[in-house]
Image (cartoon, rainbow over all chains, first blue to last red; front, side, top):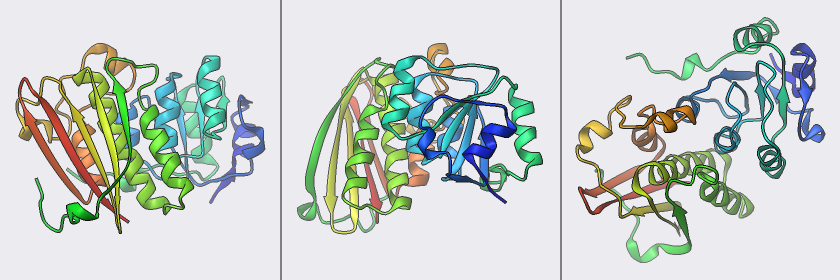
Length: 122
Length: 149
């Protein structure tokens, strides 16, 4: 199951902040995290990041991990310099008024899955 | 840490050196993005590119956060990329502990940025084909990270 970034933006009632030309990218997995260390350690490439952090490191982390876009939850929007960095990385950014739990739940209902398969049992 | 099948030193060609500014959180990570872009432009395969980028980024963040600055040198050999990450920081007191997931000496500021969860070195280990860590308390740390294509 996958959705385009455009469909995801519709489901989350999200505003497109950058790179509207890349909204046809197909997303099958997503990760909701404010912990960039975890995103770097456990993430699928070709997935979507949902975060409540809006600093430049979130954009760099997503770019380095090969993610397809970032949704900022709780109505947050990054500073202009962070948006310019995302444009440079060709990384679509979105802002939704939904909280993290609701945004993730909405996407799960639409068939998007998480990264639990990547976590080794301890 | 793991010395088997290192590429011959003679085959390594230095592509570029990048200096990393310490404690500069605004630009932390930009060297790794430059490395990723550079390798992508020469047609580097996606999976190996991702492992190089993640390893470089984790190492760069460590240098910014803990070492007050340093340098990353990017080498290429047939079939292998090498990142040599060198700093003159405080060194790692207990390397065995630092290699454990979750062990961290991060400050509140680092954690607020989304880092310092104690995943850096273990994650480099996970993404690298070979990792060597030389560290001397009070003198500095050098990581040699090899990733095979």
